[in-house]
Length: 116
Image 1 (cartoon, rainbow, N blue to C red):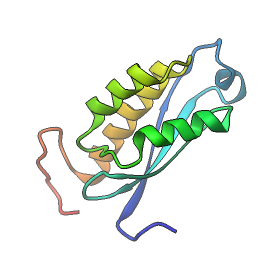
Image 2 (image 1 turned 180 degrees about the vertical axis):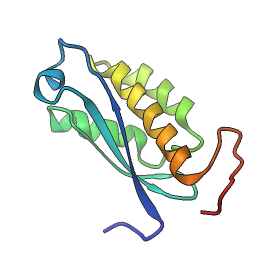
Image 3 (image 1 turned 30 degrees about the vertical axis):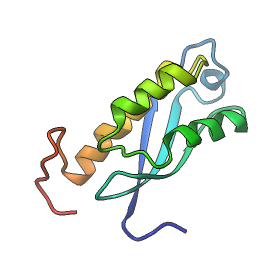
């Protein structure tokens, strides 16, 4: 289903106690299928309660790069996503970004210590 050059990265964060996700799962998760070298997001899933929310999140993120577009994704979430999970979603993206950098050897400056 996914190309051989893809990887899965998961970000997680604590939602507020008022959010149904907290009561159901305790954590908010986002799973991102990425092209390993570019960080381009190929697919997204998250543990939201409603499918429309999941689909909206996917529409904002698919095609963006977890390597290069984190600030743009955060801005888009702040401008377009108005739910109790806005801050946890941003935290999940940042957590996934850090996991991606650790997994691939990329650093924020864009240097690569290991070959992809």
